[in-house]
Amino acid sequence: MSLFGFKIIPTSKIIDNVFAIKSQMVNFFLYVDRDNIIAVDAGTKNKATLLELKSINIDPNSVKAIFLTHGDNDHVGGVGFFPNAKLYITKPRKLC
Picture 1: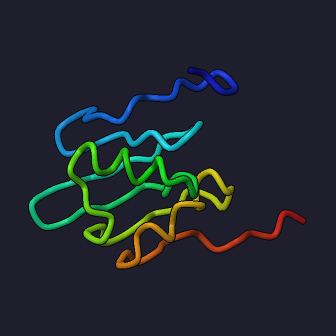
Picture 2: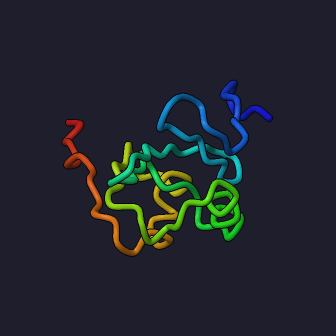
């Protein structure tokens, strides 16, 4: 599937310790090691996201941090699925 020329990756391990999670029409990514699970973005607020995490044995309660690339709903909608994660996002900038 493609949206605006971007390919949506099925939920899978893409390299050592890094997983792509399919969340409707976007991906977000997890870094997983023995002590940490860190997300880059959080996907959409869709229960299918939880099923995708379960398919790779990730407990959303174990995610320690989420680094948000920007505030669009398809990147921040799923934040509520990770109640124990600390959120990180850049400060808004003035454009003018």
